[in-house]
Image 1: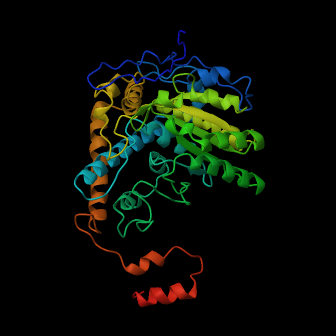
Image 2: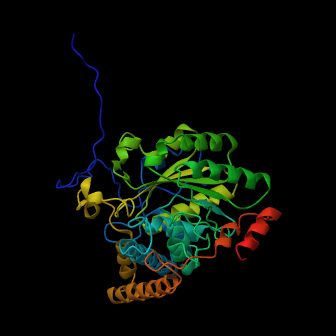
Image 3: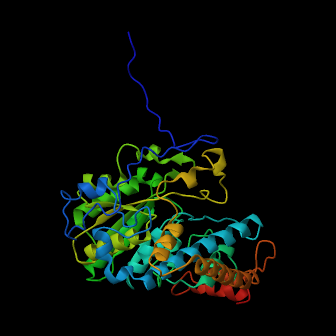
Length: 412
């Protein structure tokens, strides 16, 4: 008897020493998709879930309907601010990764290559909106003008850490800046975002929720549970999938990314979905503006797949050279988000290479200055222990009497 059954195993674009091949990705020309009505039905969403919203062409020119849709949001002033946001995020990543390697802090996760998504999306949100991020969305904080000393302090877990060392580095939390406490358990933030959005609708609140998940974690039960609940109750939530091609050392194919787009999964649950070039800052602004207007207008949930590439390691504990080619990031067909926006601004005579070099130096100097101040409050190399009584602070709205006595016995 001839055996016909067989298994299929996903393969990444490259392995160490192999030339990267992204030919499986179908990248349409910029400006080919129209801007749909914000009330777009799931039946009309198929071209947007299978295609790719792009604004910048290969030469850095903004083209097509989505470029016009941006209007004043695509002004040179706003785009220069966006470029600075991305440069700031990149400088933070660089300095804190070095600090981890120097033993000054325990752990760090970079978002290199993905900066446009968080920086751009955050600039489109309003006060009262809430993000439910993963550990690689710190660019949302940069795009929200979160204080740099708090962001860096949290990574050092010293007295400048607003969370007092209660969270792993990069698992930030700030209600004021719309950044829900990051959970290290992947997928949980999706169901939390849907629940928060449902509560906001019940309370007649104008705020919207934005859930974030990576391509690998779409294989989790929480991803599907969130989509089902969102499709039934239609709360004001934007469900973001950051498809950066890698879940630690597993390529996106292991989460089914090679069979269909992640945006198309939303259609299966009756949720209109779009797919966006996540390395195109103008496309990020335009798609975010459209999705936020839809959610806030009461037209129900929307799923966005952001197509991007994780240029750095998964974390400071990871060595990507053992599972992918060192040339893979350079071969990524959608390029680098910083370089693409810089090219666009230069093309518009709104920027120059000289100003860019100066801006990089200014941003890096600002980060170094704040980092030095934060380090003066303690690092792993030069620890400055906090008072023991601090473990009882910021835990209870009204501290129980027995804990109050214990805190007093500890000297506070």
